[in-house]
Amino acid sequence: MQGSTQGPSVGESSTLGVRGGVGNEQFARTTHEIGRLDRAEPSDPEKAYGIERLKKLGATVFEGSTDPADAENWLNMLEKCFDVINCPEERKVRLATFLLQKEAEGWWKSILARRSDARALDWQTFRGIFEDKYYPSTYCEAKKDEFLGLKQGSLSVVRGSIPSFHGMLTLL
View 1 (cartoon, rainbow, N blue to C red):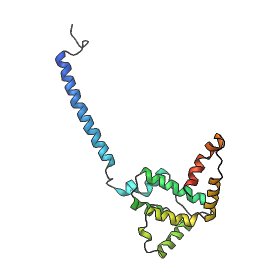
View 2 (cartoon, helix red, strand yellow; view 1 turned 135 degrees about the vertical axis):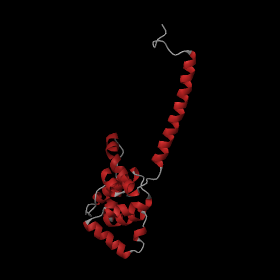
View 3 (cartoon, helix red, strand yellow; view 1 turned 90 degrees about the horizontal axis):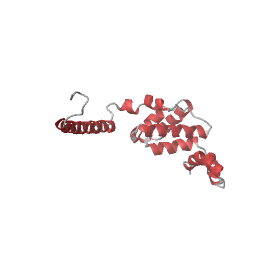
View 4 (cartoon, rainbow, N blue to C red; view 1 turned 90 degrees about the vertical axis):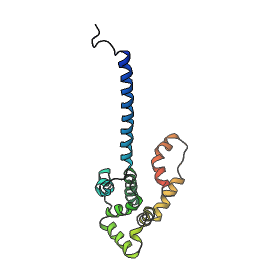
């Protein structure tokens, strides 16, 4: 009996091999095309780089604060969101300033009134102006002193200091 319990004959085996090869080639082409489409510019930039997308990733509004750590955390979260969505540099300032409210929005409006180039600022320049406002020099100096005072004598101190160590590096 040669029913379905036996394997394919020699001729059938080679046919399956050819079909499998064609299938693999098609699979490779399809996979390549999907990857290309993933890297392509989104057709709707507002959807790809909009406020709602940032908020879904955890970005929040910033109302101003007397605590420099609040400002630092807000900027760091925005940068994480920008990184995840591959946000183009030219959109970052517009998105960030949209999230400013209350006192912080008033501060930004005063920047717009004083600087003719404010709407064309790049992200690093905006970040510097923001830090000048919300990171007093005493805060930066205290962070530098804390950084310089870190002792690496025991492993527990080093392990416990790694997150704050990285945070302090951004202020140097």
